Amino acid sequence: MSSGLQIGIMDLMNHLIGALDAPFAGAVVFGVHFDGHLVVEALLVAVIVFLLFQKSYQPQKRPLTRK
Image (tube, rainbow, N blue to C red; front, side, top):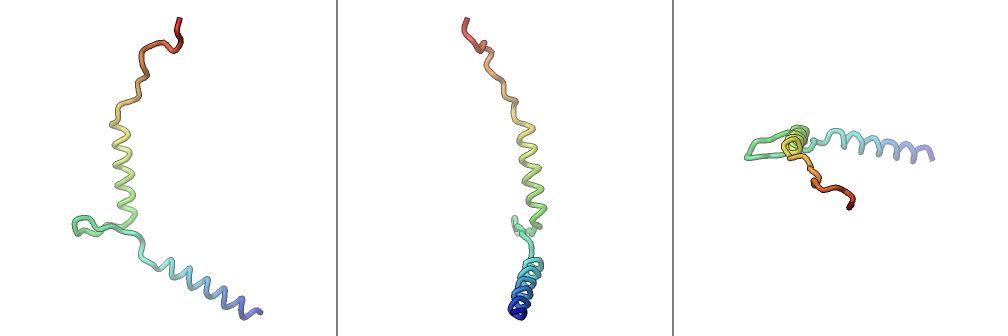
């Protein structure tokens, strides 16, 4: 019974070590390789800049209730 548990634990350890040794996500843009975190950071900066340059919402100038 304990040998089955040991095999299970060793198998789990091998899967975890394999997952940590795997290369992380990356991108190739115009033949240039970028790491995954640089792609995510550039995307976040682009979204922030886009949101900053949007016009603010302006409600209509009419009253909310009819008199």
